[in-house]
Image 1 (cartoon, rainbow, N blue to C red):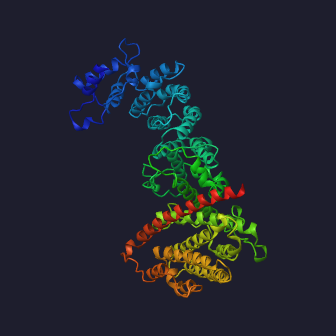
Image 2: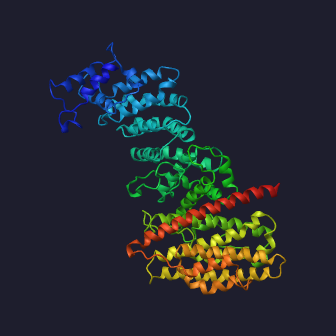
Length: 594
């Protein structure tokens, strides 16, 4: 190996710039002689054949394998794929792979395969069957938490070979390696993307195209049902894989070291991940709708990153899944204006005034939480795409604007029943928090719908009128709740709670530079004084700050980007708040149900 290393430096050297990427040999040159040395001592009949030692040795020179492949290109007695055959035949003959060297073998094999020419199909046809046995042996030899970069590079190189018929037999063992990698090892998003795109591009039959993609999406679906537990980073990688194919992407977080928001979606090929995930849409809805989801995520965390993310992983997952659902609802609404009814049948059928009891109150809280996450996912998508339109040309609008009337009715159930129901449990107490969060999200959702259309268009007018109609229905409910507090013994605490929530709503709309706030501020200010003749000093200062706020004045070309940055910052903070209140309510609800 010392001789190979020295000769490799000569064989890999170049005298002229054009020789760097050329396989042309100059007769009688030192480079040609060195390459002939490589070729002669790589044949299996040679007593000095170093192929087994070559792949089991840690090689520091990054160009060494390229030099070996170039040496065998013009060697008639040995083609460039022969070393791969000899290596795999030797490994497959053993009962188990050599565990201490397996990662070194994988790295060297990946380096070599990326340098071997792919043009000749005949030579690859004899090599590919050996990989089936090799991958099956590899399943029991990979250590936990190892880096799968080399293994994924081998799979990607195989999927680029020109013999797709032979590759079909490798799909099953490759899928098992991929599944184990997602469950126990460290993965990179770009490599998972490359594998799924290569598989989708290589095969013609739909079943084969989606074979590897379906494997990883099944791992995600199983994890969302808490039947398996995946490392934190891998879980977010799979969510990002699905979102990229659906036309969205996750927001940046400190959980993943890889920059997941930097992918140019237009340059990515199809993976079919969204179509595979669509079959688990009901499970995804249950994931974001379940009150105990974040507690389960926290309890099932596997780690895998160096950051303290136990308080952020669950809400980040929910926001990503909610964005996927929002995009799927948008596509469904394009086909059928009431397509959302199949998944949210309660949306257009809120409880009537005669039906409002404890069960209806609890159901209404669940519906409001579900709508909050869906709107959050939709606004996240809009904020990350400055022009409010994804790469398919469809704006993300999962909830039709006509549903604003029914959303207001759900809000009124909370506002009219809160004084009586709030003392039942912490979940009931948190209902007012969720109600005001939904008010913020629905207001900004309608405003984003209006801002994405021309000012003189019908859609702009409908979106603006929807906001005003919504608050025209909700405001009397707020006044009724405040009037109820005057006859209660604890009315002062209730009034202060409502005022604080309402003031927080106004501050959120001010932060997002909402046009609705300026229109409704004269109507909303008296609400804060309906119980108090004089506001407490702290609330008065906050109210004055909202009233005197002057937004920044960016240039016209920067307005959309400026608003998107502010919106995204606000949404991330709201995402964290929603997650924390759900964790607290989940713990309290479990206590009360016992």
